[in-house]
Amino acid sequence: MLITILSGVVYGVQSRLIQVEVDVSQGLPCFQIVGLPGSEVREAKERVKVALKNVGVKLPPVCINVNLSPADLPKNGTMFDLPVAVGIMTALGELKREMVEGILFLGELGLSGELKPVKGVLPIVREASAKGIRKCFLPADNRWEGALVREIECVGVPRIQEASAVLRGERQEAFFESGAEKRPVPVVPEEGDGKEPVSAVREKEPDFSDINGQCALKRAAEVAAAGFHNLLIIGPPGSGKTMLARRIPSILPPLSLEESLEVSTVYSICGLLQSAGSLKTTRPFLHPHHTVTGRALTGGGRIPKPGMISLAHRGVLFLDELPEFKRETLDILRQPLEDRQVQIARSSGSYVYPADFMLVGAMNPCPCGFYPDRKRCRCTPYEVKRYLSRVSGPILDRMDICVEALPMGFSDITAREKGEDSAQVRKRVMAARERQEERFAGTGLRFNADMNAADVERYCFLGEGELRYMERMFSCMQLSARAYHRILKTARTIADLDDSDRIGEIHLAEAICYRQSDRKYWRQHTL
Image 1 (cartoon, helix red, strand yellow):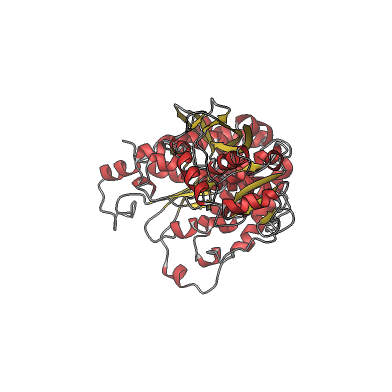
Image 2 (tube, rainbow, N blue to C red):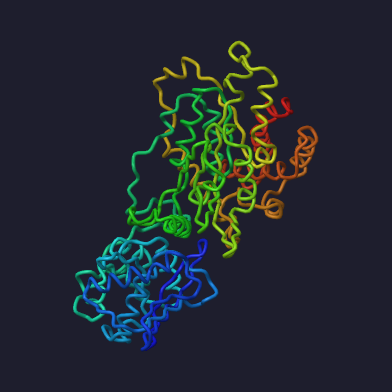
């Protein structure tokens, strides 16, 4: 008897529905799975046999063949255990065919029949919903993740016995969870309304008011947050570089609904969404140690999975002590910073992961950290050159804003008057964000930093006076084409913060100032 059960699998951040075809026939007893199964999928037959035995389903001496269709796509993971078990039970007459038709099944089986959580539920359920599937069975620990897709009914069951009982109609409410009827899902605001998610609880975050002094540094962070620009902070130890970087998420606009689904999908694939019980509503902040490997940063492995830069999608990737990272590790970021995605090629296929993140770097200007203060710095010119050369020119060229953190004075440290808090700064950032939404409506762009060269020409129009000014600066500063366009994008953001429709010389001048620190250090110290 041939039975077909619906399931799914994830490739990169995309998912595909899989037909689990189960045939039970007379012949020599066997149990085989075909259709390019990975090692975890091949092991499913042992888990399924023992689990069915332990829940009272006796397997007669028959030939069981399972085909995972399409057969030319590789299948990995443990989500096929439940659909295989349900297919066998249906073929043996334990369940009726009409009970399982049009239903998606995902879940890993324990030997006792317990259903254990699996990764990648959210993208698979979203794909099933898009294909017209209106019901799915999931492990109980995955039920909230599936319920985030409101158009589909999700049944969360702890054991295969309960799944069988619900399918027969013996139990309906005890283990049933619906995304639309039972538990309310966090309400994420529509793009551009500037409100926090209704049910998102904002934890106590580090606030901008904790930073004394450093007005220029805080202004640069505000500009970077408003346009989602890459930011590099250079300064001596104790000047507040890390302190400020950790507070950037507190002034970023909340995730839109579309962005929230994108980020939640990546976290679901990595198995990091189950404990949250809701969509990701705050922008990610990733802070890897400088010993991180290139594979951990970009993703990959025998069975490819997202890396840290994909987990930072639509958020912030903070690299503290930037020169301490291996140069080859930093250079891996060049392509993702340009293309906003990571492409990983394996013999099993090509995988694409999103990587649209805001890069924030912090570094000392020399090994001891006090250059150019020769009263405190004891580094030789060669040591300074060697230290700075760990950050390559192409990476520097991709930094929209490079700002210097000056040493803190006694009056700054002991000042009792607090500066602006994050809420005040975020209000201005949100206003600039709304201007960008209006400008880029229908284009697929979100922030000024997303613009390419053609977009810069279209949206960063300069008058005759501004063009002459930039012509002088281009020659004087020996800018590359990429650096020129990044200055214009930064100037566009500064104009948005000033609520100005056109870019003026004052906006260009401030944007150019954010390119002076790299000239101060790298242009004077080239190996």
